[in-house]
Length: 211
Image 1 (tube, one colour):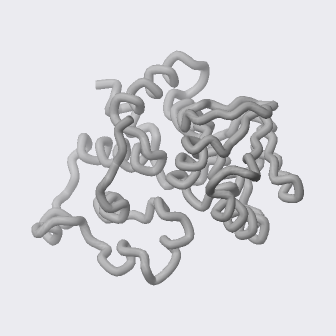
Image 2: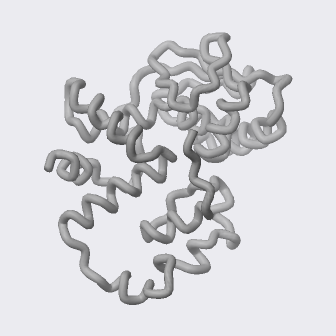
């Protein structure tokens, strides 16, 4: 499976916005974007002042969403094709599909501090969906699914730490019903656009792929 192995903070700097790829670390003084808020590369000054074309804006929006959810081009294009076949607006359908990925859902439940850590928990076999182990990060959850973690699995220290922080902040979205005492979550319904608090303009992605 393909993986991004370079520095994560370069992605935030390239998109000129915090993508919170490292969870709570992105809100501390250690965040590289806060220390170097410019595009990577020796010509970052000229690149930043250059005006983007319409195609450039559409491309940057697509890249931003891909990097937020940690997917590559082939998989992202497949998600777009699925979104076009479903009822409703294609852009919103695309975001809903990405939001219901298991690695993202694990993060939203509070089991992981970031989507990247959520993917690790899934791939290590810690996550259970309806009592069955699921180690596929792209698994799409549906309403009624119950998500739990194997309390004897590796990585439980990070899970407990993430759950503690999440329970303090109460940041679980409305489409997920979280029980912090039992460490389990139930998918109540599909997310709607207002539940997806991302600084993205999905219509630009639709325009890009519609050419």
